[in-house]
Image 1 (cartoon, rainbow, N blue to C red):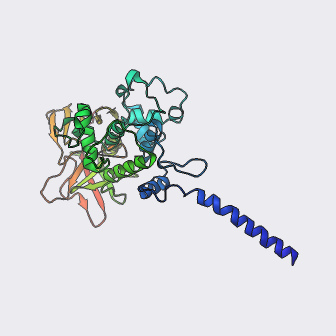
Image 2 (cartoon, one colour):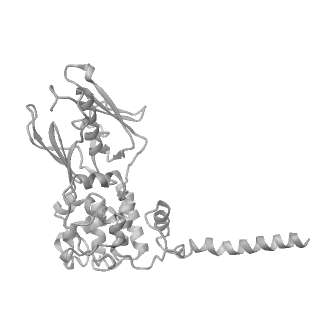
Image 3 (tube, helix red, strand yellow):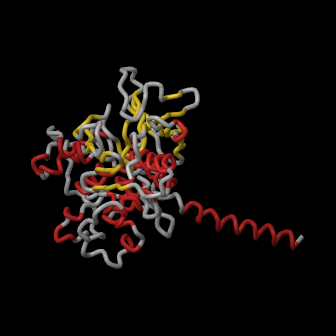
Length: 378
């Protein structure tokens, strides 16, 4: 009897000890207005709590903390393939002078922020980031809109910013704030102001990032299969086929979008197989400030996030160099420039790479036909 009582008492003691530990993980944000967004951020791993299990939603968030949260939310992690591609194919920005030894730099997040263009070093006086300074709402607007791939419309659309304190906001920032508000990622205050120099709490930051991600991921569909087909003009024995794997596909506003990088990398692979060429890396350039990506492949193609115009420079007879137009503006998803390659609107428009019968709805497959030139470009 005594032995059974000891076991029972021990079980009760262990249960009592476990309750506070479990409760400490979820106590301080359950009544917060941004509860759902905070839960989304925690579950997705964009942000973590403190060692004591708290989140502290009303605590001010620093520049470094917000930068990491935003990068993680948009899958621009230091070890991601996209970030490595950007780092290998772009000119480095001017270094930030005060980041040596800071965790943001040591863990690779600073490089991810700079090569992706979410942080622009010229925005900061004397190129000092001051990572532990509270992030301002203006900085949040700049970084968030850049993460959504809206630099081009933010800088080119001449539309007024409808907030009560717009005259206090620098002219060059207004387009970013306006687009952030229009997308629903940012919100103003009940008195109609934006307060661009104000700071944000951890709860507010989580809410803004969650809304930005939801907006950017509109129509993302991981079930669509993309097949590249490479056709030779005369010799069908050189035809090749490649299924793109693990690439994001997006269906938005009646258009199907695929990553420009995946298309041109696949195109290069098929061309090498068709002509028996040695494997080589596709010549590419990434501009993090303008959010443009360019490829040298038979022609030089250049696309910009948020822009429907694209450029090409002719290297062989048949296509004149110039500016052309996509059926819709390019988008930005997980740091990838997504180009529209097929229209579902029924208006007969489709891109240079996609034929009208390219979408096979019964197999959920998109086929991109890439025609080879008459002779290989060596």
